[in-house]
Amino acid sequence: MDRSTEKDIIVRAGLTTGAYQLSLPKNVVKAILEIKKKYFEYRSGREGEEFERERRKHEEEVKKILSVEGLRNFDETSLLTLANNLYAFRWWTEKDWLLGYWIKGAGGIDKLRKNLEELLYSDRSLAERFNSFRKNVKGVGVAMITEMLAYFDPKTYGVYNRKVKEALLKLGITQTGKSLDINKISISKLTGE
Image (cartoon, rainbow, N blue to C red; front, side):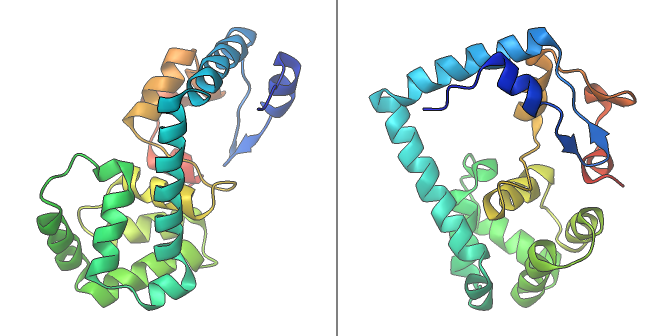
């Protein structure tokens, strides 16, 4: 179990995120520590252990599909497995329709695969890769793209969706830099472009 102290979090809070410096006020750090404590209590129970097993299973499946080998063999079955393992789409019941929409929106399964390869493995900037993927694959939004990126490389990428924004606001994080207001955040701010 991670036992970070307030001092540890303050020291680590100076992480640079894109072009913006993230500094956390003391009340935010205390809120994070309290939530972290409750989360570890939850994780030590039966429900928390089951959640963690499920999360790891999702992570393993997504990483397998997004690997070089997985993308080499990417087909509609892979796409269905991907959709079934992303939390951004767990509420969708008509996944067959969704897959058809993505495939059609990308111009075919091969073009969808090529766009995934570009998003994950290109040397281009995150902003270029992200914007290209959104432009070339219709029906895929910020939540899905950031979730795939976070599964692909969790030390580099994070998930950004409505729940994350709400959590940041609840913690009291309204500014991530002198000019970046969480309420007005856009994907261009996340990618640094």
